[in-house]
Image 1 (cartoon, rainbow, N blue to C red):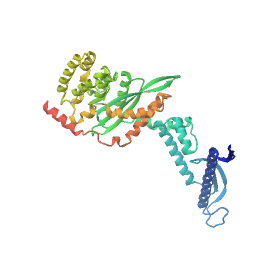
Image 2: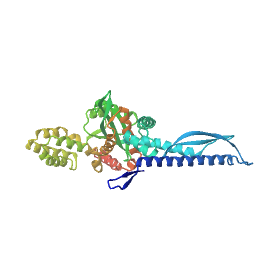
Image 3: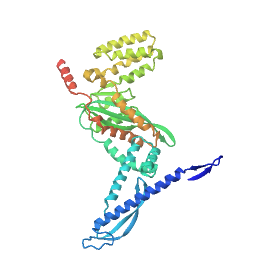
Image 4: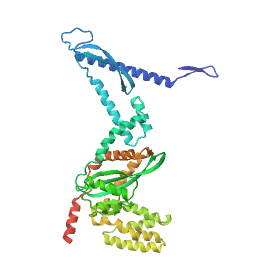
Length: 402
């Protein structure tokens, strides 16, 4: 503390908060250090069955000095005096507890980064909670441990049969030779034969083209993906061709929400609401034939509105959005859009946004995969998403009609 005189002659006491903070840190560390050392001495006495210099017939061992070691605690780094014993190994439960705590801190560091917390923020958090600032290099080293677990999870065999598969891609930034370039991360989730959702896979693609999608679908098929009857996605370039190559028996459903956006991008703002209502009317009818009839009326009206490009787009691509009509009506709402996967992709985007540009494709892939792995371990995959008995009944009715 210092004193400062004012114009009137009175004195104001000024407090150096940094000095007090440092003093308190030293006091706390000193207390923690003293407490740990006292506990270690007590533990050594218990192992020897006698106190220091105590003469006793029940004594099992003798003190042989101490050695120093550093230990990280929440109060900062302290120096502990480890007792050495003759005739007995000194195995301390106290240090083991700290080792477990340090291991949990390491795991927390990895989880923080892989959950999308920036490296600088991780450093700040560790300094506040652990008493030491962990460097970016340390975070990177720790992440290599969890990368192995994620890679093993990412390549696990796909068990069972998956009727519906949702596909989507995410474009992230990465640095390459001093330049910022883009890398695509492709994701798939599915609904299995019992109606539960599953994270099927994630893979890096140079870009969302036929080569990238073909490699991803082959990756899924090689790991055991089977029973696919409908694939739901946006109109990604090269995806439909790749789908026919690897899953020729599966139908393709173009996401209706993305389709509306594509069409409305060609519509003047003043007419967008009217056109949106017309498009929704196509998908609000009872079956595929009625939807096609409605589409014909919509196309004619669009031409009357002088929206020839919009009419042409609807005419050439509306059938891509009608595949869901071949499945049970109770499933329609959840299989005509890519919303189940889109919500997950939004969460991944939120997590990756804080990183900015990734140093390489692997770190981008691992961060996204870590988030998917976390989602897979939550209640997300334990709740029945669709009643697949409706599909069995629908298929039986189709066979009886045929």
